Image (cartoon, rainbow, N blue to C red):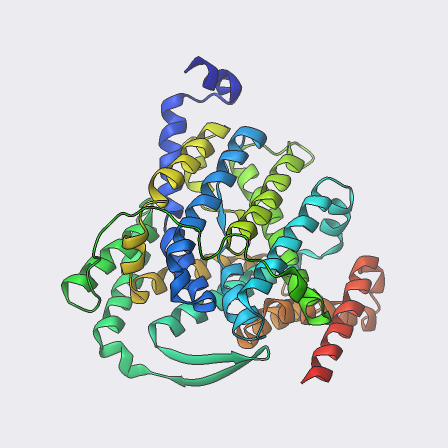
Length: 444
């Protein structure tokens, strides 16, 4: 006990073992929904046979990476496969662009390696300063709408498919609302909203489990045959196809994974650090390099195990709100992922789509809130942000949304006589995306 208090500097942060343990449990409860949601999303791309391995991979990548954050960076931040990026992986890269899931894993792996390199060099700070805030906020909000679209599609309220990066909307099905799955979806949606409004910890997890149980009772979904089983990695471990990345289109996929992961991590870590009271007077984050390096290692490890991008979770704020200030909080959270998540494959497999779809919609709501930070009085900032917000869900492609945003931002600034406000790196990125879109147009 004394070693933990000394290593994690309890006295420095004014915390106690009891506080840290409760904070770690709170963070786990708040983000444990990923154990059910991530396998469902990724199995769309990998097939139902991958589901058991995906539950194990989700728990293992979250547990190991969060423990690395605890022991190396000593921060109360938890990590897991990121929402939004798993949807991009499954619905855009695999289903929309036609890449195999093995190639998509290779893209995540390469993105993680790039992230690691940038995390230990000064290039990282140059890129951070080059991308305007309005674009960072817009990408986050656009991904939120993307997740909402996926949730509504999963439950059957809408029908849409993606082909070649273009969304094909095939109908709004109001009659679904009168079916058992439809009614249970809205029950879960309202239950989650009520729990969030009441500030109940673990609202998403509580809603998923409650809605599932009601679905089992009403026979809208079959009961689980068992609750626990041994973990397995047989379907996804080391299945990356690096050779399949040797084409121009794949470069856009890697770039999209990297951009979203990199800037989502920056925004999340900054927000969490501010909430925990870590920021210096100059607004800098202590041990930022360790935090970002841990995140990058998590992405690379996740790809090797067989999941989409692993990233720092904003849900860590729940543990910080409970008083968690040291790596001990993350150690508890990571340990719970390993102790519980690795063995609940049968339970996760029995969770129906109508129970997880409300979580996707609510996460979309959370992410959309970033848009309030965009200055809508400045059209050269707001219009490109709007184009990103529109393009990501309606093309089922984060990369297209980012590219359209970067190009329009640069063009609007130049033609309004404000070209000096555009960082040189943004000019280069606008040219790269213009060439990328020209390549896509030529390959159709």
